[in-house]
Image (cartoon, rainbow, N blue to C red; front, side, top):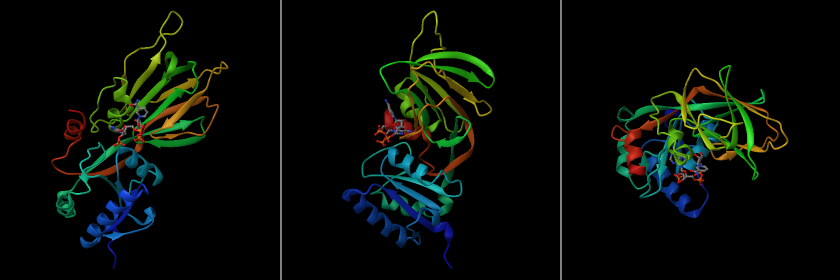
Length: 267
Ligand code: NAP
């Protein structure tokens, strides 16, 4: 009988170099008693081979599954936030296949509701940005409180694991993923006697709801980014952002905490 807990699906780019590395990884998996499956729906382990961008796509394209483990495998010599292995570390991967050595870490996700109808998840962040060389205006509500009226280039609402990505480039804080929260950072807010914003990043707890009402003044042309994908919907009026009840599970080695990965990537 097949042990369904050992069905692995490899998600990767289709260039020759990556395909070659994945071929070796498939052999390694099979020689360690795993079954390599060709449909992600049949897998309970989804392995992304590549960088953080690939990992984000692996999670998105497989619909943020809660019933499987996501594993990030970096290419030889590379370090990425969502990767716990390098493709040439065969011994480390073989050792890790003994399940008792693997710790499971859950990563918070953001839930995005657009115009009361469309629902999305994000692992890194949702970003709202002007798509033309003009500012746009949003009313920003925290729960039912009108907090500020923003005018500028846009906003980024990031998860803790996304805090080291776009959020970090606009001086947001790096947040421990053991904290279930989301961080709001501004993109070039205009501050004058008419428009005033807090001006600093702020962190909302998992119980809070952030609502962005886009003011329809004829200059409203924001684009919405869901991790590394753009939302195709145009003329959005309302965006509600909360921390999702859903979390994705990743494998973490005992010597490979989030902060070790931050140190390895940035210091
Ligand atoms: P990309 O524009 O090709 O690359 C963005 C860079 O961000 C890559 O080096 C990527 O790492 C890295 N990255 C992604 N998620 C990360 C994380 N959680 N922590 C640290 N670094 C991370 O786009 P992409 O590779 O598809 O990644 C999409 C992400 O890019 C978005 O979710 C957003 O966070 C970020 N982004 C950043 C800026 C900015 O900093 N100005 C602007 C737009 C988007 P890899 O090389 O490992 O893929």
